[in-house]
Amino acid sequence: MKLYGKELEKDGGGTVHIETEDTEDLWHLYNLILPGDKMKCRTQRKVQSENAATGVTTSVKKVITVILDVQTVDFDTQVGQLRIKGTNTLESENIKMGASHTAEIEVHMKLSIMKECWDAVFLDRLQECTDVSAKADVAAVIMQEGIAHLCLVTPNMTIVKQRIEVNIPRKRKCGSSSHDKGLQRFYEQILLALERNIRWDVVKAVILASPGFTKDQLFKYIMEEAVKREMKELQEHKAKFVLSRSSSGFKHSLKEVMVDPAVASKLSDTKAAGEVKALDNFYDMMNEDPDRAVYGPDHCIGAAEKDAIDVLMVTDSLFRSQSLTERKKYVALVEKVKETNGDVKIFSSLHVSGERLRLLTGVAAILRFPCPELDEDDEDD
Image (cartoon, rainbow, N blue to C red):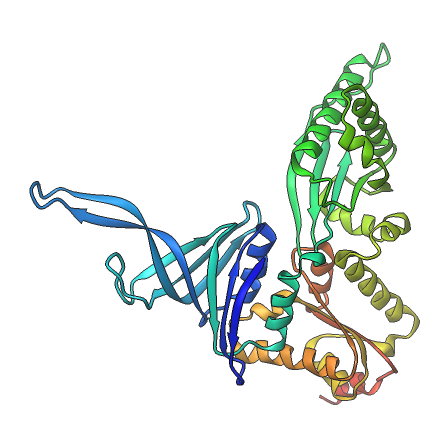
């Protein structure tokens, strides 16, 4: 995302001017723009016009500029579409003041966001999404015989780019030619999906994961075909492939793959791997020293008041709360932990690690020292 300028006042209010560059920027905007904000952009709207001579009314799409008082923000992860609905506050020839309008935000679109308060979490998100060096994408093919899911793992999202399903006949005693041909078709479909969806200059690693030896056979097929077809780019990036075991060919198995030591070492400096490691450390602490692992808003806020939090993990969905009071509670928690030099990790709800954290209420912490009194306070209540 490009940042063209910002005018922020002392009280934290103000405007930022940006341009979207890819689908992930739309996800960032989904987390930046909340009901009550204002957004200025150029958008399309159907405008009716009447022919004075014939009296016939026609509708045509026109490009207009609006400033919307935002009411709802919706993001479709499957198609990467962001829709912002609100009432117009900029009167023009083609749209009245107070008219309802829904703007579809697209890639390579300029817009301005106006807020009464740009708090610390908003500003961190803005810094993250405008920092080009922050992106380190990973691709993963999670598969079993006949079914595969090609996922792209970015710093903030896990997107299923393509589902591949091929009917593979069972092996028979009299021969396995039909089975082998089915596997060939399956591997070919995966190879084509990799060609279509992966930018080798951006991707850091390509994970092939499956139960049994399906992943090994696929990797062998890919490399042999790369030589036969003189696919030089694929051959040059052979070292980026990592093979791992998964329990199935479905997206949920990605969480097992991400903690595989071979995978973790390859992805050691990516945001997604950092989240997985932090959550695994939390579960380890729960087993080894349970008084140094807490979850839930009350326990985490109580620990923060004692300056006890070493690592705070919060899912980004908590900052999209419709309740301003609820959002301010989590912003204050993040600021308090940072003041005491704690590490704050804001998990994406579109990552498998974010889904796991959501099961722990969306907020958890590893403490510097035990706080057994937090549980005692619960018992007193």
